Every structure is written in structure tokens, then in C-alpha cells.
Image (cartoon, rainbow over all chains, first blue to last red; front, side, top):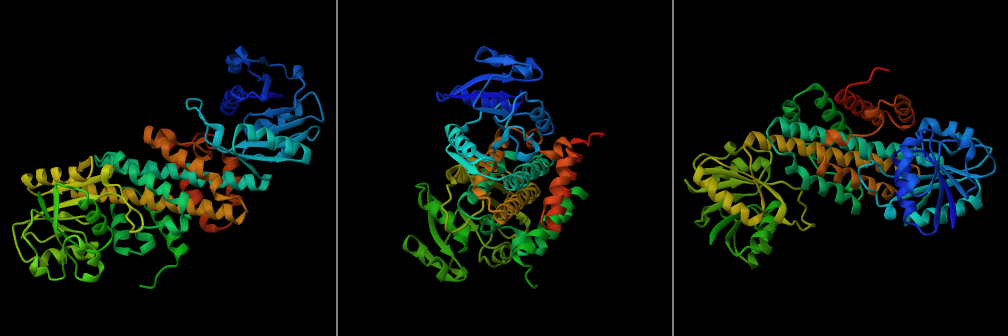
Length: 255
Length: 255
């Protein structure tokens, strides 16, 4: 059985803890957190500690803490030449202390404690300095998910950036749609099937092929009517900029 | 059985034709189109014509033509005091000729001829000048879908505008995410589960509650790193504007 030590008490640590509990091939021998109260519930199932100097010997140490703290926690590890990974999309593997053999295990998902995550098909991006460690990490991650990708630190930064567009920014457009509906006594759920269809479409079709709407058609009278209709400067600016960007993508038709 | 005449030969006409074919309560007695070739395949199942003066007597006439042509087709109808509806999200009921009793039956979805549409749960927005016509239209639309909404012309315009944000603009953000991935040899499908989760989240949670990311957290160092990383001015501008809009929505934290 693979011996694992988990460091951290946040969302990712919580979900990894739950996932490891289901795997017969993984033995989570210890959990560490600076504040032991946030991992108290782990204590029913494994050893917990808030003393970083009392970490047990393991095959892999997983640092699942906030981006800013990863370097610091890696500095504090009281050993060297062990295999240590972090779980962040946005932090280079090399930001960890070089006294240990370094790697990354980045599960690509938004985690919140309230919602159970099915790791089974979750994309996991892995990276390691050493080839032997990489092969170990690949086998280890494959216990968690069938979708394991070899992704270097540069590519991981790109994924994190692209995720801001397709997750955070998309959600903000949902918010604007929601606001427009609410202010005009239209139930937002009238748009749910369209939102689902928009998402399902790009599972089969490249987003470039799936584009529709007045900007793509260069339908200037609808665009003008929409700009007129929008209730504030901010929404008008977003409408204009995204419309111009779509028009540039497809080549503005001569009128 | 309800007698229906369908006018038009585009995507919506095609999908309505298919949907009516499955309903035992609806008798599609005739299809009209200016160009009869585009509705030739309807001719196997019902009467077709390109002569607007030979329209049969029906309970409802459905004008499913492009936005620009709706008024014109309604002018050309060779009768008065019949119930006539159009199917557009963006055109007022009152843009049709007042010689007939007017209404709207707007199915809220993106239609393409290649993809079959399940009308069963599709939102249908209806409106009519006359109460008796409205009740008829409600019963008629309920044959097509279990999700029928009473929506006036003003509200319908709002829905159409909101749909641009949650469908057309969202798809463009998918496109940008796709571009960023492709240019860095990252498979875009690594983001599919995150995209699906983003959509599913707002089926239960208001988009305002579902927001996450560096803009929401006011994580300026990540925002700066992302702006640095983006490959062109256009993407940087979109990033800045949507980040500022999220920060305004949640109140920029004092640093």
C-alpha cells in the first residue's frame, strides 16, 4: 500500500482525504495542519498533527495549502530527498524547496466543501522533476481518476488562465443575464435550457464553429437596439467589447 | 383537431413541422413558403403552396420567417380577423398587421437543421392581444411543451438580450479558452468537466452566489500575472473589463 501524508486543511485537502478513504491501494497515514482544529474530523480515521517536525515517513507528501503558503510549507519540511507535490494550478513546481524531489498533482475543478466531488473522471494534471517519480505519480493519480494528463508548469499556468475565462467570466455573464431577467420580472430559469445547450454544443463542436448571434451575423440594427436597451454603462461596454471581439474573429463583413 | 397553417421554410418552420407531426391533437393542414423548393419535403405529409392567396381556413397561422420579413408577410395575408402569431424573440407583436388578431409563440432555443430539438421541455414564450386567443395559444403551446410562459413583447426583448450574454458571449469565452489551450499544446477537453460544473452550479445556485476566482477574491498578483501572460491586447481588454465588473459587483476590498 502507498503511504501518503497530506498537509493542509482547506477544500482540496478535504476532498483528497475523502477520495483516499475510498481507495484500498492508498494508506493515508497522517494529516498535518498548522491549525489542528480544521482537521479534527480527519482524526477519527488517521493520525493528525500540528507539529511539522513529527511527520511520518511516506511515499508521497501532498501539500494542499493556499498558493502563497506552498513555498513556506516546503521550506519547513524537516527532511530531504522525499517526494513532495503541491496541488495548485497556478504555482510552479520550482517554487517548492529543492531539498526534496518535487512534483505537482493538480485536480482541475472548483472545489467547495458543501459539494461532493467525483474524482473518477476529474482531469488530474501531473508533473515531476524525476522520471521515476513521474511514473509513480502517474500510477498514483490513476487510482484517483481515469483522466490523468502530463502537464508542465507553463501549460498548467495556461490552463489556469483559460479556466478564468470559461468558468469565472462565464459565470459573470450568467450573473448579468440573471440581473437583466430579474429587473424585468422574467424568471431566469427560462434561460436554463439555452445555457445547457450552449455548453453541450462545444463538447462535440469547436467553439469557433458553434458561434451564433447578432455579432457573428453582423446584424447592426439588433446590436444597436441591444446597446440602447442595456441599463448601464458597464453592461454596454462589455456588450461592445465582446461584440467587437466576435466580429474580429470572424472578419467583419463589408456592409 | 386544431387546424394549423405554417408560413416559412427556415429552421424554426422545419422544427415546428417535425413537432406537429408527432401531435395527434394538431392537424397541420398547409405549409406556405415564397420559395416552394425549401418546403418540398413537407409536401409528402401535407399540402404545400407558394401562393399566399390560396391559404386555407385555420385556427392559427404561424409566421416562422426571418425577423425582417414578419411585418411584410403579415401585410400580405389575404384575410382579416384570423389568429396570427410569429415565432421571433426580437420582434414586437405589434409589428404585424392589425387586420388580424395577433400573438407570439417564441420557442427559446438555438435551432439548427442538423440537430433534432426536443420540444417537450423547451421554454415557449407566448403572448396574445385578446384573452380568448391567449387561452387558445396557451392550450395549443402546452401540446408542444410542458414549459409555457406568458411573456409580453418588452420581456421577450429582455430575454433575447440576456440570451446574447449567456449564449453568444459565453460561447466566445469558450473560444478564447480554446485558443489559449491550442496555442500551448493543451487539449481543450481538459476543461470540459469544469465547463459543465460551471453550468450545473447555476441550476441550483444564483450566479451571484456561484462566483469564484481571482477577481472575486481581489487577488491582484494573480490578476497581474494573467494580464502579463495573455497573448494579445484584445484578450487583455476583455480580462480587465470583466475583472473590473466582477470587482464592482462584489465591492472592491480595501487593500
